[in-house]
Amino acid sequence: MHGTGPPLVTPFDADADLDEDALRDLVGWVEARGVDFLVPCGSNSEAELMTAEERARAIEIVAAEASVPVLAGTGSPGKRETLVATEAAADAGADAAFVVTPFYYGHDQSTLAAYYREVADAAAIPVYLYSVPVFTDVTLEPETVGRLAEHPNVAGMKDSSGDIAAFQRIRERTADADFDLMVGAGGVLGQALAAGGTGGVLALANVAPEATTAVYEASEAGDDEHARELTAACVELNHAVTADYGIPGLKYAMRQRGAPAGHARSPHRPVDEDARAALDDLLDELADLRIDR
Image 1 (cartoon, helix red, strand yellow):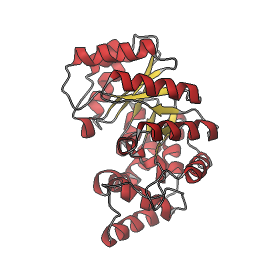
Image 2: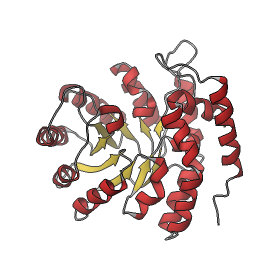
Image 3: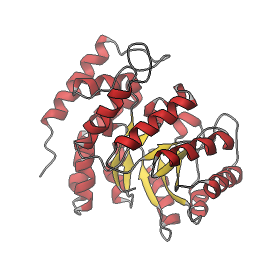
Image 4: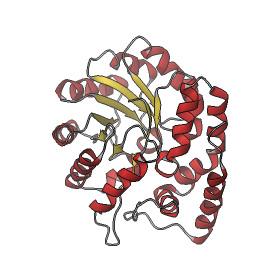
């Protein structure tokens, strides 16, 4: 996968049920604003708050509706559930599987590597590694990634550490492989692309897909300075819809922009008045942002 894509939020209705029509509409909304691929059932999709059946249905809907590649989140703490979900995603038409590091129990790097090799051996579609230590307290070390990149069915990785030095070390260890390296932190997108990244899977791409696309296009055109400038202009909004206000804030901001984001599922709670005001101010700044030179 190259370019930028959102870990697509999952619209829930007022009763917290999957809103299938809104999900279809959301696919069209982000595609019309330039995303290069879609990632249903990622962290910002509230996948961990969904049943296995709901996750499979969401992937099925997105794969049927999308006109861009679909990188489907299929990872769980155990291999059996991951393989069942990956098979279902492949049957639904997903282009690749997005597999989070096993979490809950502690595993060393050799165990993580063995797990990914077993998943990749069995999967009918390419496998992308997903390291998101802020949620899992598990980090795939650059040396481990380098070894896994040699597997013919391990196609790439999303690194959500936000650590550019570690990102560069991963790139160095995968440089000779056919391996897509994507960043998961919108606040460092320009820097990661300059360091050899092939794109980003970004919460920010749900609410500001035009901006994340513009960063990637500037980088591809060799204008790293403009890519960094655009990244810097979006840092505060990115922080607000991730660290500050999380998924409820992200969905609020999306709704303010006209996206059919739906509601967040419990235990999430709607953002309060102060948060809404802060997000509105940041959205006003986004509206004033000039993405072209």
